Image 1 (cartoon, helix red, strand yellow):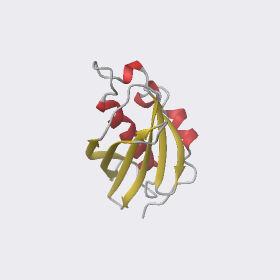
Image 2: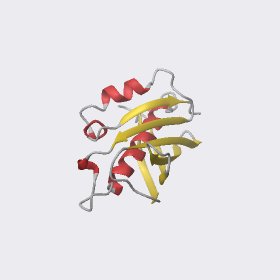
Image 3: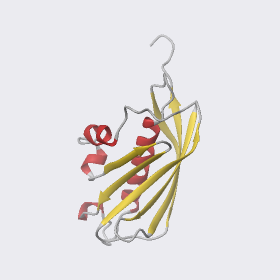
Length: 145
């Protein structure tokens, strides 16, 4: 059974992400709680598509990062890591400036898989911009390793 690992905090994720995609895109985890992770990302020109609207890939990257951090924070005892096996997103709106926020919530916390939903919103108005769902496969140490 997966439960929140109390030693995993928002600060932990923000420290380790600095040199990776989340850090380069300006993502920040703002809250880690039982069955929930929150994140935010300021909109900068590098996150926009050539049409000067927020690139769908930027939105997916934020949602996937929030769900990935949520999975790590809820790994079953003894699990080694995880990998994403499916993602889906529905985009309902876009932005050109400001910030976006994301709330990831657990739908299933099993021993071999986890399913997370995320909602991405306008950081100022709260208007919903995207719905996201991912399935994560839990990775266990292999015998003899």
